[in-house]
Structure formats: C-alpha cells, structure tokens
Amino acid sequence: MLNRFALYFILLTSASALAITQTQALEQGKPSSNQKNEYNFHNIPAQLESAKQKLYKTGTDKKDLDALVDIFKEGWQLKNNVNDKGWQNVVVALNTEYDIEQGNIDAGIENYKAITDYYHNLGDADKEAFSWRELGIRMPLNVDHWAVKQQEFYARSLDLYKKTGNKIGIASAREGIAISHFNQGKVDLAEAEMLAVLKLYTAAGYKELNVSENFLSEIYRRKGNNYRRLYYELEALKNSPKKVDSSNMAYVVSSELAIGQIYYDLGNYNTSMEWYKKTPFFDPRHRDLTDYYYLLPNVVAPMRALGQARQAIEFIKQCTINSPP
Image (tube, rainbow, N blue to C red; front, side):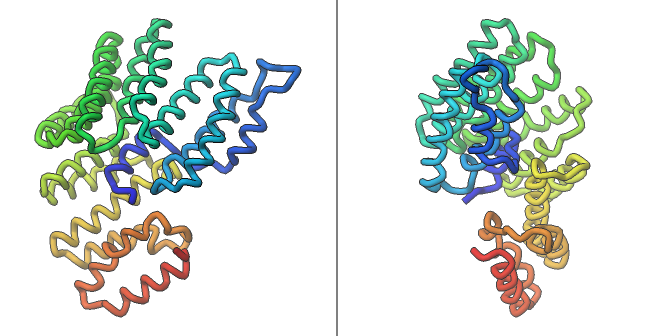
C-alpha cells in the first residue's frame, strides 16, 4: 500500500507519467553504427521517467521489477556508448533507486557516489550539494539505520549550499535533515526544524511551499493535532502550483482526502463529505481508481455516520463499475 508519507517522498523526486513507452524511447535514443555521438537527448529522460513509473508503482510486483532489469541493462549499455555525463548520471541515479527498491541499499549508495564525486572533481559545489540531497531523498522510509545515513547526506548538502550561498538550497537541505529526524522518531525536533524551514523559504522568495506544508501536516498527524494538521493542509492547497498537472495532481488529491479525513475525525461529517466530493472518486473524468481503492472505507465513513448506508453501498458499486479492481 502506498501511504501518504511515501507519496510525499515519491513526488519530491518529481516522477511524472509520460506517454512514450520504454521500448520506443530506447530505440530512439540508441546510437547508430555510423554516428555515435549525436543523439536526440530529449528521448533519454523520457525513457527513464517511463521506467520510474514501474519503479514507483504501488507494491513490488515481480513482473514490474523484472521488466526494469532489462530496461536498466539496455540503459547501462547505452550509457557506456554515449559520451555525455549528464545522461550517464541520470542512468546511475535511476539504477540507485532500483537497488534501493530491491533492498541493495549499500550497493545503491556506492553506485550513486559516482555522481557526487563527478561534481566534486568538477568543482561544482551547487550541483554536488543537490546530488547529496537527492541521495538523501532516495533513502528508504521509517528505518532508523538508514535515517541516520540519510541525515548525513543532507548535512553534506547543507555544508556545500552554505559555501555557495544558495538560500533555497540551504532551506531544502535543512528540510531534508528534518525529514531524517522524523524518520528517526524525533517528531518534536522535526516540527521545530520545519517551522524554521518555512521561514527560510519565505525569506528567499520561494513561493511553492505546498510540499513542505504537506510534510508539516504529516508531522501534526503523528502528534495527533488535527487542528494544526488542517491548517497546513489548507495552506498546502493554497500554495500549490496554479496549473494542476500530472506532476502535482497527486498532492492536491492527497490534501483533499486528508482534509476530508480530518473533518471526519473532528465529527463534522457534512464538511468531510464536501471535501471528499472534490476527489477523483466523484470526478467522472477519472476512470482508473486502482491506486485509491484502499481509501474507499475513508470516503464512505461520513456517509455511514450520516445514516446513508444505502448510498454508501451504491457508491462503492459505482466505483467498481467505473474502474474494475
């Protein structure tokens, strides 16, 4: 099951659905026998983003992971044929994510250091800092040992961003440290750090605060403070990008579902239903509800509380008709 905290990290890496298939992208990106150094590099990230969809898919379906092995083998070979470090680094990063998904975390970290070493040797402290931050994001969730390692990566990122004076980078690295403290169960410390991070982002002129506010909401969920949680979910919606697309829609839906649940927990069932009606469950444009089925009990709970058991049953039936499980 894909929980909401996992969604926060998955979307933090900006994985988005692309129409191009893995096979199409690989074929378009492969070098020809006569011309090995001129390519349409726009196809390379498309292939990798498409591969991410399998990697990030809910669950650990063996067929998905087996398919990724073949994709990565081809990608690795193509990496060796292409004299472009940006492309090579993207392949290394995605292979790191695959290693971590498979549980080979030490191997994934070791492979990824090729990227941080590259930017270090190049003398590009800003990109090296970003790379350490990205490695922190890739660490598994809710595992104390790896949370400590994650904190180390974010701390390296912070030190480098301080040297370059990148204010938004400093805030993002501090946010990462707060995430690692949260993963270590240091919830009060993570709360204090995140409140400071919001001030840093604001002072730096950064406007899209919704991701950080979603995380603060998660902190307050852990602390059992529904009123604070509600405040930050509403703030996250207000500060979301104005154009809702595939890359940020999941955040919007997640906030709407969370607000519906909060109002339910507070006993305000009518308002809870109003928020749930904003979600894909009630939107005829969304026919694939597979990833949302585990939330159906939450959606129908206010109906039951309002004495609408029959309507709840009909609603569940309609959902299964619209999107068969």
